[in-house]
Length: 85
Image (cartoon, rainbow, N blue to C red):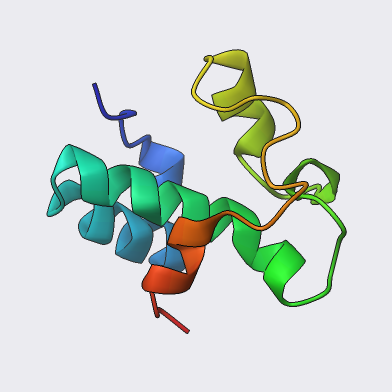
């Protein structure tokens, strides 16, 4: 059910760290981490919505049906529960 790690991702230290976090989590924790990752640019004032961040995997997860295209227009409650700054 979890997205597969690509060789390209494994070569990047950041991507590898994110994969390790996700690989060790249960499904609920996995979804919370995705929410955190996708909402983080909004939280830090870089964009108004997750879909505006050009470097995000958000559009891929929308296409897969995991998110509504307007997700994150209003701050989701579960992103505040994760403190990974």
